Image (tube, rainbow, N blue to C red):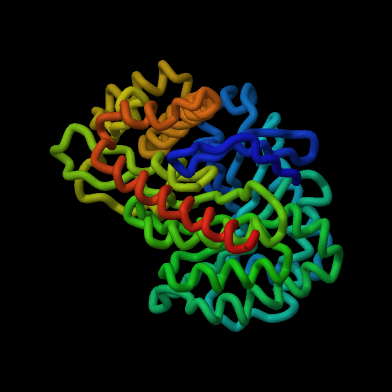
Length: 389
């Protein structure tokens, strides 16, 4: 994977980065197309021909359980069928770059060396065969109800470190170019330590877990993250880093409110180069879900009825799905993807700040975004001066 920083805004933290991998290319900022291995009605599938007509970025979430991996391990026939199924899911990706995010579902934290070796081999096979283009460190998901989260030190010491050690026993430099580090949702004090951990393995692009937070509410962590990334770029002599946000929330609003500000798209103005929506397990709902559609004109999410949602889906050529929440996500994916094209054009014209300033539903956040950017840029200038002196 090759990165080239083409342009960055003077007042905000938006960057145009050209990404090339396996003969494909796209530019940031960009809204990703989500594909979930266990969900037929993922946005990528519902968007139909649109994703084949554009150059984009697919986030492919691959769910693998411990029991499933044990069945696959040392059984070539089952491994072949597993990889064939994934290849089938990704057969119509067009010119889109595919980012594989493995989600390893575990019952406990006793992950064996054999599991790490089997999981690594499968991921490398998917990359070598060209089924996926780039991939991230696996996310661990505890499936026992009494285990809510994985302690950070256990994730890195008991899983990530041995995983990287085994992975890089093949070809360190080549693998590092197509590998993304995973940054769990952490406090701002832990971000630098995590970035430094990955740099030791030459892993310098990252997926960032928002865990249904909005970029505005996650600003202290993002500030520390961007600061760490800017320092890293100076150290390794590179301009441009991919920061892909996952499970980025648009913000909440009471069901009677007609419109809410689109906080998710503000990730593009806070240094995040691409992002995806949250996908939670389907639960039995006591009330009718509220649907909202993104409006490019003012960066608002407008409340919309079931009937109007279906009409909008027809207008946008979204394939009908049984779950209207999936249809809603497909519609908003397409609308935000279009806006990301506009953002790139405004950046080329040096009109990005004025463009954001015209979006009345996010006006209250504009000063915070400016302050966020100015503080980081001033620190970057001081760092450069100190290095020169």
